[in-house]
Structure formats: structure tokens, C-alpha cells
Length: 186
Image (cartoon, rainbow, N blue to C red; front, side):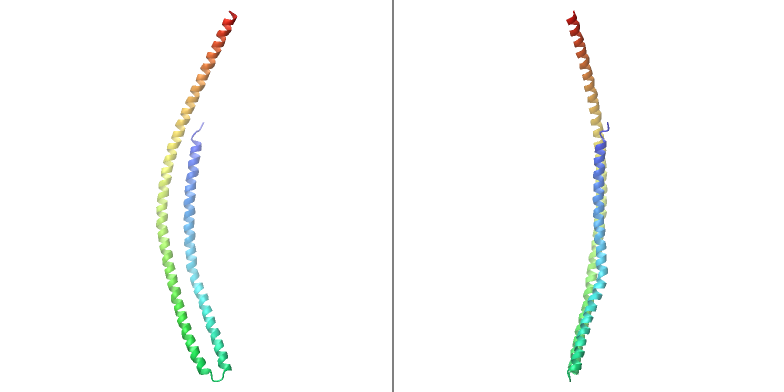
């Protein structure tokens, strides 16, 4: 009988679980990296969409000022002053908007780079630790298999001895029964 098979199977399942957990963690880290890249790549679209929104609002104000200028007699000079002030404010807003997005992208990229660097170091350390764990686990398995085989051999030896003793007891019982039969006949 192979006493080591359940032990070996248990250790194999444990090692597979350790490796699957490691892969799941690595996939989680990779997912976060891809998510960071997607966010960084979306900044251009977000900035462009927001810029278009601001420009549309500026166009709407210009249209309103055009309507005021065409319907209110003598308002042309005042409307032009308002239009110049509005354009200056929108120019300032768009410039700050571009600078803000540039700063946000730079900060986010720096954070993502730091995350990538930190996780690369962490994954390297994790790989080393898992390799050591698996090595120690394999050594423990070898010792456990050896112990199970020794126990199995001892159990089989003990079972052989028990069977031998049972055979001797049967022989003694048969001899005793024969002796009793002989005495009874005599």
C-alpha cells in the first residue's frame, strides 16, 4: 500500500494554491498598471472635451453680445469692451486649464511610474519569497513522504506480526482442541 500518495497530493495542491495566489496578485498589479495607462491616455480626451466646452461657452457669450450689439443702438463700444474683457478672461481660463491639465498629467504619470517601480520591486521580492517557500515546502514534503513511508512500513510489519501471532494462536487453539478431543476419547 502506498501511504505517501495522500501526502504528496496534499503538498501538490498546496503548492498549486501558492502559485495561483501569486499569479492572481501579479495579474492584479498588471490590471492596475493598465488602468493607470488608460487614465493617463484619457487625459488628452478630457482636456480636449473640456476645452471645447469652454470655447462653446465663449462662442455663446459672443453670440449674445452680437445680439445685444445689433439690437441696442449705440452699444457697440460698450459691447466691444465687454467682448475684450470676456476674451481676456477666457484666454486666462484656457491657459490655466492647459497648465492644470499638464500638471495633473505630470503628477499622475509620476505617481504611476512610482507605482510601477515599487510594484516591480515588490514582485521581484515576492518571486524570491515564493521560490524559497516552495523550496522549503518541497523539503517538508520529502520529509513527510519519507515519514509516511516509514510509518507505512512499520504498520505493514506490525500487521505481519499480528497476523503471525494470530496464526500462532490458531495453531495453539487447534492443538488445544485436539488435545481435548484426545482426552475425551481416552
